[in-house]
Length: 292
Image 1 (tube, rainbow, N blue to C red):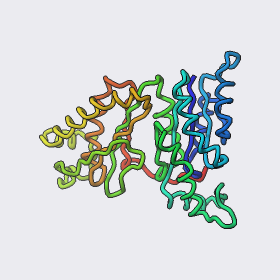
Image 2 (cartoon, one colour):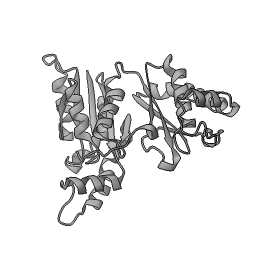
Image 3 (cartoon, rainbow, N blue to C red):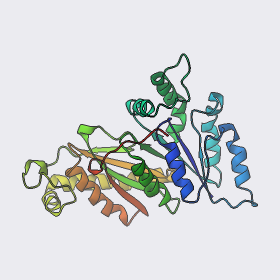
């Protein structure tokens, strides 16, 4: 049986993720009291029930004292035969403030004396122990509802077995480093196709750019170094029950060099790891994700 624990700050898209999972056959419970999780797992693990896929949401709506018990509860679950994965959704504080302001919904931690900004900061502190245990963290700051659903589908639903799922994500440093990356590599030192008027409007997936970069010694060297590093360390993470790994590669604009490297590294690892995916952050149209 597969148990997904969905957590994250309010407004990050947890409801969207749960709805997506429910649409694909998961038995879902929103806002499960953390103290009831062991009893719930015992119940769904009984031979009389047939629930191979279950997802529960645990967040700041819980009693604070119960939230403190979550790390030990999860540790006990992960040491059992039950396959448990923790997925943590988050977004930048300004993004969350904007979403709540636009939706005009009340944050669960706001009171007469605690404003929205303070509640969002407090919520991060409350959920930090869960965030630290997450096998997959997703930054939804620039995602639309459709993009979040796509992310859950490709990263979670298409993960057919219990082996490690690897994501290569290209990005532009001018737009900030992805907060959900496990490893970050900087490709800004490499020859830049941007300075060629012919190559400038293209991307790292276009044949002309691929041909240009594949002939650069430094590009090949960095690609080989990243591959060797991952080949050495990914088995260690998988041995420690890590389910997801995001490798982010950045260049200035996230259009040429980082895109090329992610595509090439996907080819390198496609025959070694069952689930290898690529996300090009700057090439994806960005829309708003409503509060949920």
